[in-house]
Amino acid sequence: MEIRQAEEKDILAINEIDARCFDAAVASDDALVRGRINHYANHFWVACENEKVVGYINGFCTDKENLEDEMLVCPEQHTETGTWQMLFGLAVDPEYQCRGIASALLRHAIHDAEAHGRMGLVLTCKDRLVPYYKRYGFVDEGLSVYVSEDGPWYQMRLRLTSK
Image (cartoon, rainbow, N blue to C red; front, side, top):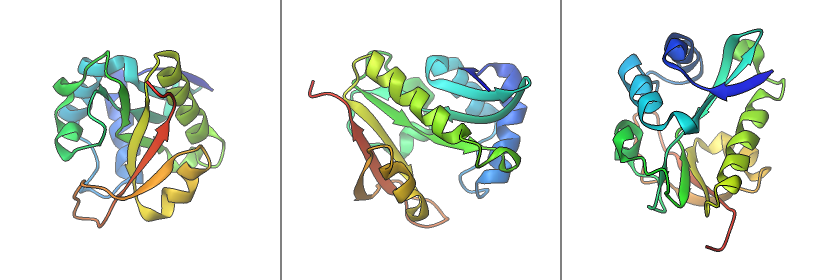
């Protein structure tokens, strides 16, 4: 498996993974993925097996401590020197799940945040995934301010430094 930065040629594969992994209310579209790649390609990684995109993780950097709804649709808010790494999406094609790909992508994002001296990473997830992220040291901070048609989301935080 290879992990590399996402490119525009990956948009279709990323959207297909989203459609298979998320409810339509939170799945991405071409314009959103293209905007994310164009504004923060350094923080949008794909996992490939035999050159096929089978998973991804992405999110931008900011000095804001909490993930806000607007961040998900406004990639231009990315600040490369931001102290926090937000994570907006982690997904693996169902045919490739349970092979450690999501773990490898998450560890890659954590390592990148550590290497750049960020204070930590913040994400939101459904309640069924809270235990998964806790295995990586994320702390459940309770209900997120993120609002979605598909029910509540929980904010998770992994602190890396005491900047």
